[in-house]
Structure formats: C-alpha cells, structure tokens
Image 1 (cartoon, helix red, strand yellow):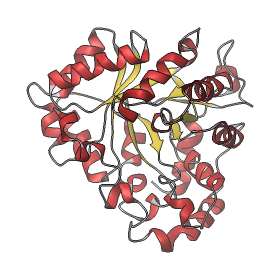
Image 2 (tube, rainbow, N blue to C red):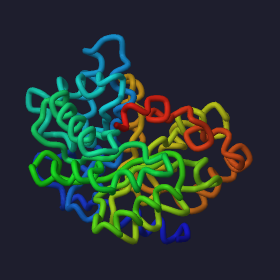
Image 3 (cartoon, helix red, strand yellow):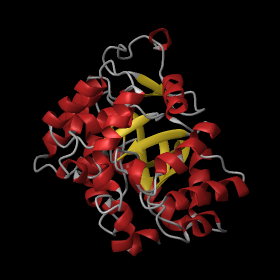
Image 4 (cartoon, one colour):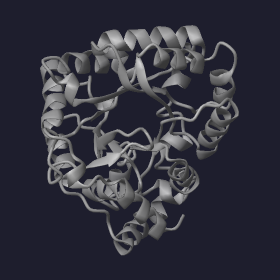
Amino acid sequence: MNRREFLEATLALMVAPSAFAAGTPAPQDIPRRKLGRTGEQVSCIGLGGAHIGGQKDEAESIRIIRGALDRGINFMDNCWDYHEGQSEVRMGKALQEGYRAKAFLMTKIDGRDKKTAAAQIDESLRRLRTDHLDLLQLHEIIHENDPQRSFGPGGALEAMQEAQKAGKARFLGFTGHKSPAMHLAMLEAGQKHGVRFDAVQMPLNVLDAHYDSFEKRVLPVLVREEIGVLGMKPLGGAFILQSKTVSAVDCLRYALSLPVSVTITGMDSMARLEQALKVARGFQPLSEKQIQALLAKTEKVAKDGALEKYKSSTHFDGTTQHPEWLG
C-alpha cells in the first residue's frame, strides 16, 4: 500500500459524528474509530497498561485511569504480567463505581498451553473485577515456536476460544513487538486452523517505517482482512525522543495518521494524559508531505534498528526473561 492508500484507509476508520451514540464523547473531544469488523468503536488513543501500576501511590494510578475515561478515552490496555499484576489490580479498582461501562477493556495473557492460559485468564478477570473482557489477546508473539505451541493440541488458543464461548471474552487477538515475520506466521497459523483474529497489536512509529517494518509488511494485511489494528510504542519506548529528531507530539501524530483503530500510549502521569488528549482531540491525519518530512528526520537514526530495542534486543522481552510465564 502506498501513502495515499494508507490515508484513505485511515479516513475509512474514522467514525462520523452522527454515528456516536447518545452519551458518548463528542467528536471534538476524542474521536472514535472502527475496530476492524467487530462493530465496536474505540477511542483513537488508548491508555497503555504497562505505565499503570508503577506509580508510588495507587490513588494516582486510579486518578489517571478515571481521568482518561472521563475525558473520552475508552480503550484500556493491560496484561497479566504488568507490574506483577498491579496494573490489572489498580485498573480493576478504577473501573468500579460505574467506570467499567465506559471502558473497552483489553488484557493479555502469556500462557502458551491451555492450562496456563486458562488460569491466567481467570486471574486477570479477578484482578480487573469484571466478568468479561472486551478483548483478550495472546501476549508477546516473539518466539519462533509460538504459532505451533499456541495452536497445537492443548494450546493457548483452546483456552481463549473456550473463554470466548463462556462469555469471558468478546473478541480475540494477539500482540508482539519482535518481528513482522512472526506476526505473519501467526496470522497464517490462524488461517490454517480456521481462526480469524479480531485484532492484532504491534509497534507502529516513525522508526518502524525504516527498519524491518510492521507498517510495510503487516499493516496492509490487517487492513485488507479488516482486522482491528492496535498500534503501540508510538514513542518507541522513549528511545525515539532520545534521538532528538522528533517530538512526542510528532510521534503521536504520525502514529495516529496510520490506518489504526487505536494508538496505545503510556500515560504514567496526569501531564502525559493531558499531552495525549491534546493531540487526539479533533485529530485529522497528517498530509503525505508532513509524513514524509517526519520520516526524513528519522531515517538516519532508524536504519540499523539500534533504537528499536524491542526488535533488536531482549530489552522488552518479558517472556524471555520469565519463561515460566509461558507454562
């Protein structure tokens, strides 16, 4: 897909003001986008769970989550392993008092076998204080044997599908940050086993476009298959900012200009939340000229993948450091 086709795909995901149900945030606040073929509408920007749970004061975590929901961000990202479960625990507390109804709630599990995956699903539900997830995803597809283990007899997909049938999860997906080839292999395995994922999560940012690119190799496939695209690491785990080539606002604007349903970003303080809100309110995609200008600024620092440590090192590989999470 070329840039023009990307822009057209992005515009097609954007929800017209008349499509907003009564009581939902006005478009001039946080625009909503279609989540693939699910029929769901999610905020174009989402709250990253990895950045919730590390605050010294639990009340601050709750304040950030509720502040996001009150201001129109409905997509809540989380994972069974974030902060030893504290991200889910704190989000579960924040979603009480009527806040669960405002949220499109997603979490991820690490287990690759059915028993481990099922146990993690139930533990996540308890921590999050809910009887169902809006989206359940298999976390960190970063190992060569992940498709085989996940789809094999007694694999994680069996637990996920049973959870879906039992009403514990509405939609299913997977995530990963290591390699576009691994994502394509997972999609191929799903097709082979009759599983069409509802959503897929991956890094999409101004560095990725230059090196072993998810944007170039995986994004067009997801758009064609009408699978919800969850962009993550818009700041590249802060490494993009360290390059001093573009600003945080530039990074968010670039990521949101891609045909993604939501860009998930870290909001570990009220200041970071306000920054994300400022970019998202009334957002319109960048022009092709603006996108090319940002890519030109980052081309030199991005070409060898050194700043994309989630691809080129084990820096972000939780399940490599903790193989016991896989089961």
